Length: 65
Image (tube, rainbow, N blue to C red; front, side):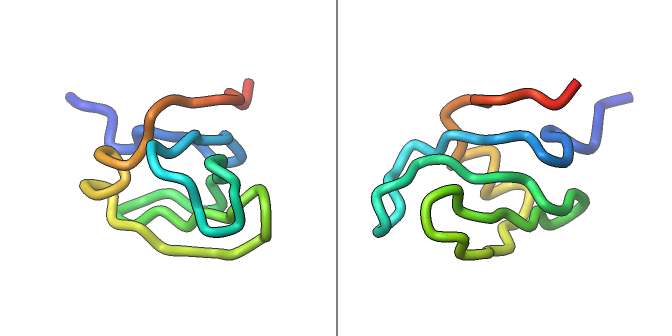
């Protein structure tokens, strides 16, 4: 069985594109079908579908143990 959640709560993800505030890092606030993310630069909160998020993420910067 495939793991449904690609990313865990409180992990920091680095996106391929830069946010208008200048940051590339986003913190995972909620997981599921949609992911709720908070920009580490300006605090903006967005909701991204899991399929779209997989395409946007470059790497995991900080892994929660």
